[in-house]
Amino acid sequence: MLIDRAEITIEAGHGGAGSVSFGLGKHSGPNGGTGGKGGDLYIRSTSDITLLNQFSREFDFKAEDGERGDKFNKTGKGGNDLELLVPVGTSIINKETGELIVELTKVDQKELICKGGIGGKGNFEFKNPRRTTPEFAQPGLPGEKYKVILSLKLIADYGLIGLPNAGKSSLLNELTAAKAKIANYPFTTLFPNIGAIGNKFIADIPGLIENASIGKGLGIGFLKHIEKVSVLLHCISVESSDILKDYEIVRNELGKYNKELLNKKEIILLTKSDLIDGKELEKKLKILKKKSDKVFTISIHDWEAIEKLKQLLK
Ligand SMILES: Nc1nc2c(ncn2[C@@H]2O[C@H](COP(=O)(O)OP(=O)(O)OP(=O)(O)O)[C@@H](O)[C@H]2O)c(=O)[nH]1
Ligand SMILES: [Mg+2]
Image (cartoon, rainbow, N blue to C red; front, top):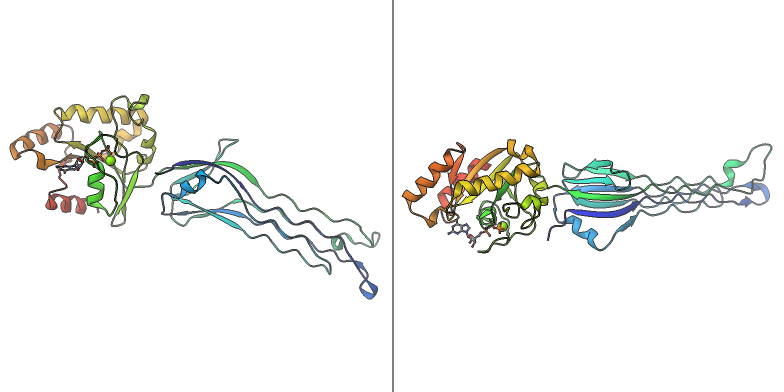
C-alpha cells in the first residue's frame, strides 16, 4: 500500500541551559559554561516511494536537545541532528498556515526544516567589572517546531491511465521490473505503482471510471500522481465494444480533475491486441487514429511490440 499523505509534528532540539558555577581559590569567579545547541531537523528525499508509510504509526519527531553547560566554562554538548527520509516528490506543508515549506523534487535533496535552539549563556558570560559574581544563567531556547503535512506526488516521466482492466499494470510489469498486482477484474490496482525504464519512470495508477470525479469507483484523487508526467500512456483494451467512448470517459475525468492534464502529450495504446484478429484490430486502430496520430497496438504477448514501445519510451 502506498501512503501519499501524512501529518506529523517535527521539532528541533531545545538548546541546553547555561550553567551557574564558581571556581575556587586562584580560579575563583563565575565559570558556568554555555548550553549546547539543540540538534537540527532535516528532511531528505530518496527514491523509495513507500517511505511515507513510516508515518502511519509514529507522528512525533524531535532532534536531540543540547546538553547543559558545565563548570570550568565548558560548553554543553550539542544535540544530534535528526534526519527524516521521505520519497522524492514530497511537499512539506505547514499545517497551521497552509504554506508550502519546501518541495523535494530531486533524489537526495536535503533540507533544514527546524533549526535547533541555541544554548543559554552560562554565568561566565555575564561577568563584568560591576557584576563579579552573577548567580544566574540563561535557559536555552526551544527548537523550531511545526505541524506539517507531507504530501507525495510521484515524479514520473510517463503515466499509465485508462479504464479498469485495460492492462495498465500488466504493461508496467512488461516494460519495467515492477511487480504490480494484475488480475482479471476491475480495480485491481488500489494505489499507484512505479517502475523504471532506463532512467525514466512510469507511474501506473488505479483505473478511472465515468464519474470518478464525483467519487465513483476509486475516485480521482490519485490523478495528482500524474500531474507531473510529461506523457500520458492512455490504455484502451481491444475488448471494448466502444473504444471511442472509453477514450472520452477517461479524458473527461482527467479534465474534471485538472484541465492541464488534457494538454499533456498522449500516446494511445490499444492493448491486448492478441485477443482479436488482424482485420478487427485495423478497424479499431483506424477509429482511434481520428483522435490522435500517436496510436499503437500492444500486447504483453507480443515481444516485438513491447520492445518497440520500450525503445520509444527510453
Ligand atoms: N490476452 C491479454 N490479456 C492481457 C493483456 N494485458 C493484460 N491482460 C489481462 O487483463 C487483465 C487486467 O490486467 P491489469 O494489468 O490488471 O489491468 P489494469 O488496467 O491494471 O486494471 P486496474 O488495476 O483494475 O485498473 C488481467 O487478467 C491481465 O492478465 C494482453 O496484452 N493480452
Ligand atoms: Mg492495475
